[in-house]
Amino acid sequence: MKVEALPVIQGEHNLLNYAETYGQFDWKDAEKVFSWSETGKVNMAYEAIDRHAEGARKNKIALYYQDGTRKEKYTFKEMKELSNKAGNVLKAYGDVDKGDRVFIFMPRSPELYFTVLGAIKLGAIVGPLFEAFMEGAVRDRLQDSGAKVLVTTPELLNRVPVDELPELKHIFVVGSNVEESGKIQDFNKKFEQSSKFLEVEWVDRNDGLILHYTSGSTGKPKGVLHVHNSMIQHYQTAKWVLDLKEGDVYWCTADPGWVTGTSYGIFGPWLTGTSNVIIGGRFSPESWYKMIEEYEVTVWYSAPTAFRMLMGAGDEIVKAFNLSSLRHIVSVGEPLNPEVIRWGMKVFNLRIHDTWWMTETGAQLICNYPCMEIKPGSMGKPIPGVQAAIVDDQGQELPPYRMGNLAIKKGWPSMMHTIWNNEQKYESYFMPGDWYVSGDSAYMDEEGYFWFQGRIDDVIMTSGERVGPFEVESKLVEHPAVAEAGVIGKPDPVRGEIIKAFIALRDGYEQSDELKEEIRQFVKQGLAAHAAPREIDFRDKLPKTRSGKIMRRVLKAWELDLPTGDLSTMED
Ligand code: WTA
Image (cartoon, rainbow, N blue to C red):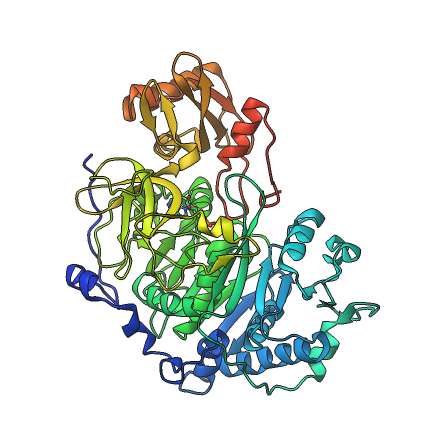
């Protein structure tokens, strides 16, 4: 297939000599930025905050925070002191030691960031949870991880089943006038009294840093453990892919309950000494554009679901804001529809750069970055230091254009260290040949660009043809009536499977059989006859994860009357 590529633009940390760099780059060289390349000992929070606080960036703004009621900013020096204070609270009143699990269950606020950094300074392993989790989801995660300390807010406290968590020893509540009793302590009061000096715990590069629970397409959520060593890749990709440099103001819209909100909401930007914007509360298209205007955001990392929402809100509202500060836009989480890229070119006059990675991979692996041509619909090429391939079920590499398992050669710095309490699950990710198998299905073209097709379990076999749901969904959202689409294979005695589409319409469109037929014809003519959905259902909303992924397994379960499995990561 020929796709017209969007031309190269210049980036600060450009990989214009990609071909040369690709072969020669060695992660060992990237380590030299950090003091531990000399001492052998490391601490992520030191490298992300204290290192700058002790140097030239001391008075530079590290954090701009805003939500409905608060508007604050903190320099690197202040971040150092405030995270020290939080660390002292956890140590003195929570008895936190190296390796202990400290869970954070609260909405985005400066205290959340002080606490995450403070816990890391003690060598603890941080477990961030989405504020929207209900009791069952909180219990599963705290139990599985054996969390010792939880930091939460008064509003969320009643979703913590304290009696069922014998290993949980201390609960810090962030709020004013918290009533202390049993395990419950007033965080703010202790924070006020704590010293701003703290001895950082120096750990080994493979000591635990963060535990992200993620649910795969089936089964219970699993705890993906990352270690301090990941910083090499967070740092390097923040430069190459996010293109962060000294004067940037960076906004990552993700919550730290999701890996994007830690790897690139905390570590990447701060390891590079960048000013980081964090916005709490609910978002609307107006408030999003307003934040970009107000903070003069230059680099913006978000997700396709958000871009589609903004696209749906129309082009007029974009014009009501001055977004001229923006120079680089990046996306992650699910495939970025070509339609969205075209829209981005129109309204921002910028390319949106897709990046592919996973909770398990810890950092970006296959990306579009400033100095490369973008083929809309492709997730780009592996970054230097990363080797990717499409392999069959035996681990044999497949030639260009053959659909198969997207696999990565083991050995990139931010790879997960293990699955908590489940070594067997961890082992199951690997295939002969040292391949990490992602569970995604994709193909590669002859220029080495990768094209996402779906999760392996989502790929549809219809009348002997393999169809990736993403391609069909992308065509569907090009139709003016379609806001969002989710596509599944539905078992069929004749065709193996047929393609069934669930569609949420844009405002102003009425459901009708004529519209269904029109949409079907649109896919038939624009993509392929065999790819046109035989069945279409209209829904007001599609089931999505909190990170914005359409949950095809839920659509499938609804359709086939099967159990839906774990729904804790589904948005309200
Ligand atoms: C999907 C996200 C297509 C994919 C940081 C992957 C993507 C899963 C992309 C990981 C992309 C993520 N194009 N699909 N650019 N990025 N995905 O763990 O199926 O929330 O395996 O991590 O999201 O999701 P996770």
